[in-house]
Length: 78
Image (cartoon, rainbow, N blue to C red; front, side, top):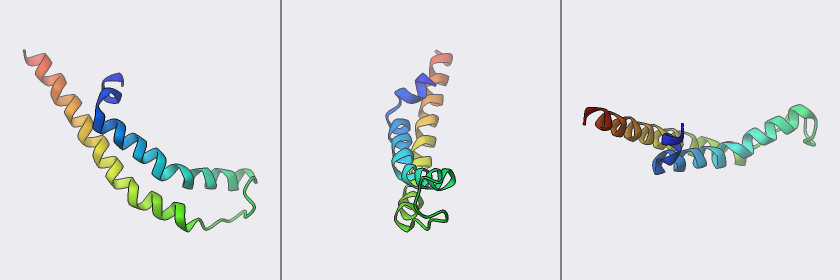
């Protein structure tokens, strides 16, 4: 896992995923625990943020993982 976290693209994707989806998940968890004023919230803003950041984050993490795997194969081959 350290090799993946050392990759710049993977880290950027992970941060983008956390920043983009974090607020939505925090609202969902707070509503389930009764800490949110509305028990059935409709968080449009955080939902749109998660919608627009999820797939770019997954793509960046996948590209970073592919780079790490390719570097590992090059090390094995030499």
